[in-house]
Image 1 (cartoon, rainbow, N blue to C red):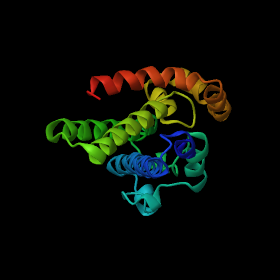
Image 2 (cartoon, rainbow, N blue to C red):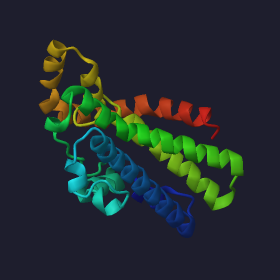
Image 3 (cartoon, helix red, strand yellow):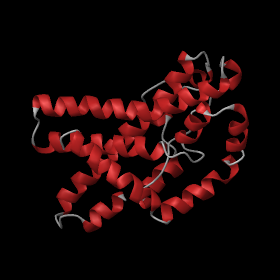
Length: 208
């Protein structure tokens, strides 16, 4: 995805390089916020696992997965290091897992709203305004993508948190097939067809 910016951009190498760097930084910020939120939610629910592993931080080094980052650069989709949690610390493991999972996308939406407010209140122009728009856009993308109800994405555990016990059991049986289902949805273009219109509507609602 990022490499395509350099090859298919405006034709001005310097401009394309700047856009490349801005998008890369936006992705790093978005992923770091997302993973930190998982760790924060787990800690607040009484699970110290992520904190003990140094994940309760905004430092990107703690959250970026080398392979996931490379896939972002090459294919346009990727992932950060999953934040581990121990359900034994949770009063209600099923609902607790749903809350921890939802915290990631929720943090991206909240950051997008905050930066949108800054954008419209202060009206930054030039590269600053462009960068804010990029960060908002990629936070929305990350939130929408992760709310797809397919394992290992956050949406899978969020949905499970609302299901009654018997349906939850059946839902969990789909988990081992989740990655194959997700890859099919991505390469078949289904995710683009779903996320694209939602992203366009979201950016429009936010005034971009």
